[in-house]
Amino acid sequence: MKTNPKTFTKRKSYVPFHGPCDPCPPIGRKYYSTPPNLYVGFQPPNLPQFPPEEALKCGTLWPTFYDFYENPYKKGAGRGHG
Image (cartoon, helix red, strand yellow):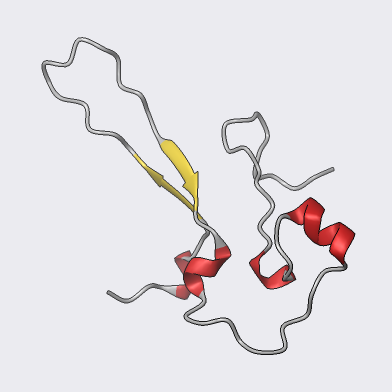
């Protein structure tokens, strides 16, 4: 399966199945985030590293694997900060 670089995103979405006899209203679109390490086949040697204090705050030692989580359900999410 080939991926189109123009449509690549770490945030994915799907619409849960809603059957014709389901008494509940449709849920709507659901979002989830995929971590950056899924897109790296192996860890290259000599990657730059965060200082220890910053690594603890970010949850990873390498900036390449850091991914800030932005809540997709929060109003205004995904539209620049400012």
